Figure 1 (cartoon, rainbow, N blue to C red):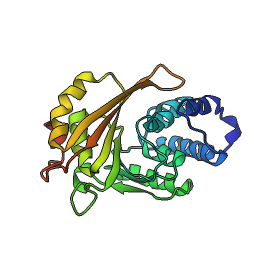
Figure 2: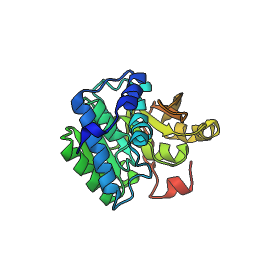
Figure 3: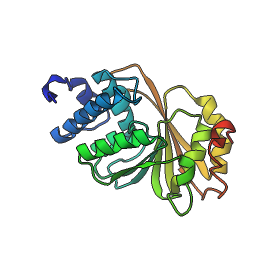
Figure 4: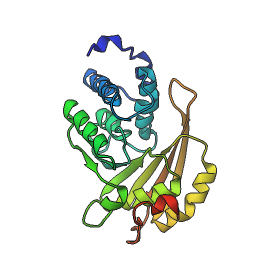
Length: 242
């Protein structure tokens, strides 16, 4: 791969807006990730965004915006639920090697891609799991195992909370990446969040660097254990939000 042909000026500027600086090794990991994303996207549906600077802004920088909500320099256990092509988990791992990350996705082909990226980028303390969010939130698996759970999945906040809050330890956080003004959605989710043992702590609004793209991080803190009956069986949280 000809790394020199990619202009990293705007990406580096975006990183600076977040107070981040990457080493040459980390920048090469991002470029290698981009190359793999485009290669694999030719034969499976990973992303509709393929132009380099757009990927840097809408996928890489968007993923890294988590640093606006929590201190990502700590050694945290993080679950990325419905990770898809690895967002936000893989960019977070590249930028913050101290994070211990589990990627969960329901499509086996995507998990194969994620494992390829992990191997080629030589990332440590990150693993990809094939499965549904409902299945791995059981007590003998990954329930209440993580300091932080994140998701960029497209679903309403009530449904996402049911999928994600069970993974979080009491005292930890579920942080949902949202792309629109979501005051009504947040208000509608308050009952579900409370039932699941959480409380709405903060909503961080910002514009992505190098763009006019509006973003939200909804921060939910887990204040008590999630009742055992949640999450409900596959598909119900989406069809019948709490």
